[in-house]
Length: 273
Image (cartoon, rainbow, N blue to C red; front, side):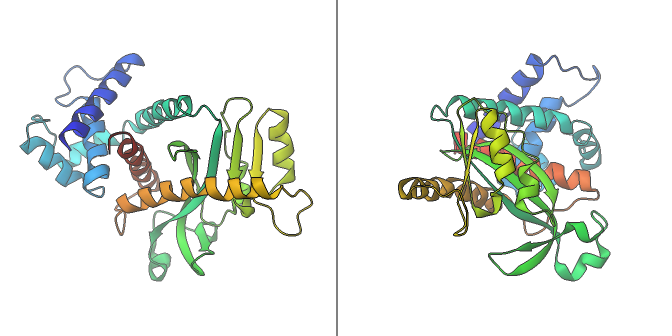
């Protein structure tokens, strides 16, 4: 844990310096320290920021630790810095992916139990009610949409309403990839229009085909697709291992920020173990 804490602070501090980030000169706790505490909470304490702050102060890593309320306010002032950090880690993952093979998939993130849907204040409306096909049950919340490299490193993440199907999510990917890249997906991502548009840009979307599809792949490529798709399932499992049973948040923005912290923590875990 000690090595990871030092690495998190070093990466965060160097990143803020490189982008010319400025903070209030009288701040007792730097933004790099706020970022470090939030990521340590996601990585080791299932998102419990109060416990993470207490541990970091006790161990002497951040002696000028803010109180819980002030820390929370500081954290919600810098959500864009976590997005910059994620993009930095994603760029490194793409650079280590010379074969240009990527995989996409989505996973459900419930905001509450189904019995509490009527009392949910974070999200309201039927658009947030989705279905987990593999478990034959419904959930209420958002979907996390991932893109990973062939070794499982996360390079893109965004959130959509739970009711959105995977083709709707597919249209929201940025596909900021090198020319000639191949993107594998499951059968739910089959969209000839998106495939043709990406092919014109030099990116090849290769979802698994349904039996009645007019564009079938040879058996050897189907085997490669099925084998490579397992990497994104492993990455999703790593994120779900860090997620608590319920994520405490008082706003949708705060809920999504905490989920992003778990995704970044998973990327850190893949780097440092």
